[in-house]
Length: 332
Image 1 (cartoon, helix red, strand yellow):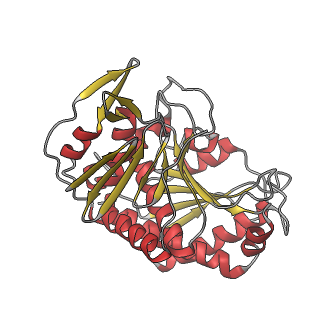
Image 2: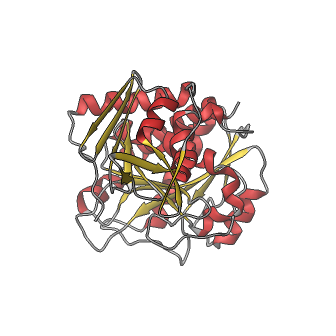
Image 3: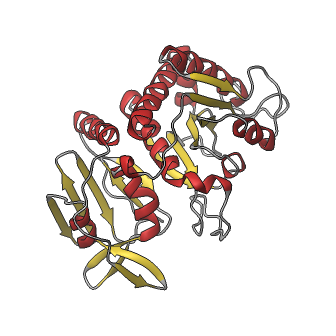
């Protein structure tokens, strides 16, 4: 079982932290004061908590037992030794490898530092970021592929409805949009990827809703493609192959952060985290791409909320605002 850092905070405090994360993503300026000093642990490269503190010039660093706190005027980052997740401004991020501990120090893998922490803290440092004016919206499922059966309806209908609302919101903000489907038709995952890759100067957002055999499961999660050499969040083994989508690893996680943080801030939903996986629809995409899970339609209370137009309007508005933030941060 993964041990997460405490998340219980007053609602106003949580909103403040998420707002700071959005401001940080928008600013994208974080000077470094030194190089990373790499330590081998179990044959893998890691960087110590002290090195991270010095590199990113955190003004305050607290080490207490297995807990680590890094604090900057616009950011709070928390680690816990042995955990495969961290919190940045109270947003949950799943790591590729657990936080290690050695000789009284906590260590983060260089893959997680380079492919997750650094793009989130310093999006303006991403090399050759995409300049985009188009958003490709991918409503999950369709036709005989109905997706999950919810308490009040089928996933395929909710994904299409939310996608149409998102299309309108993005166009109102000046973006061009392309949709993999606009009606109840079936598209293979390969067809979705091929459609996306035909469009240049674009980002890709695949829209889904979640399901679980446990009716108590609730919350929102956002996925980016797992980096080369790492395991997926779902526990599948590490891949040594470099996938087409891995070219955009840094932008993928920055886009996921913008969308997830903005939705958390606007909708106050349960945070299931920003995760990495090798979903087929993300593997072959040659542009920044994420898969967004907008809540559990198998949960009665959340499914009832998802069934309302008001909730789907709020989701569309939050995602569209996040795309604006992302464009300003890295789409220079």
